[in-house]
Image (cartoon, rainbow, N blue to C red; front, side):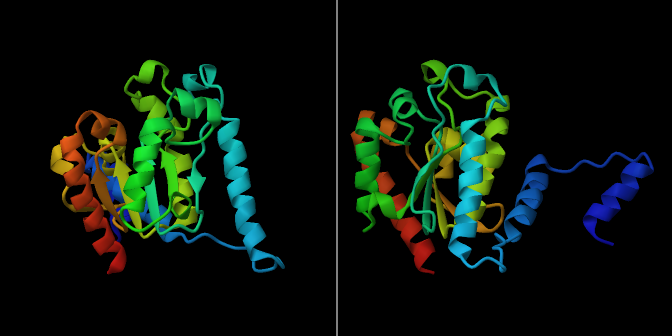
Length: 233
């Protein structure tokens, strides 16, 4: 008897079963990512079929009104870069500049992220960059749980479509959200995690933090080297 069936039987019998929240989330995500992107084999243009999936998802995000952030945004920030990328960088949320331009990681923060990407022999347009949230949070406040949940499925679909070899969680909020933990960033970086039990994930400091703490750049270099080793396996 599989675990899901067992739990259903116990629930029907009125027996409470405690299941780790993170374990349950990982099982759900693993099932989701094991469902490979299906391309229409009857189509004469398989690439177009995949592009249709991207277009529909981007349209859905642009029209999203699932949470109150839709009332204060100029536009959504979907993501940018190579949709077949091996490397995927995921930050927290767009800021004011990103909200105006509709692109993630702009200004000084974006410039530093670009240099970090180049330091591992890649160009910015060869990776894919997205955020946990697709709308800016007013006054750069910490995102609310309901705001994160509203955007969660959009990000999961992006990851499934890209199927990256490595995910870089950029900053504390992104790391804690992707890993389902409250551990501080200092404890999360320096090791390789598994997102959904399938995709290697490495945590790095956010460029905004590095602009204030230049001495921490050495640690980011170490974490990027860790990511390279994972991709080259």
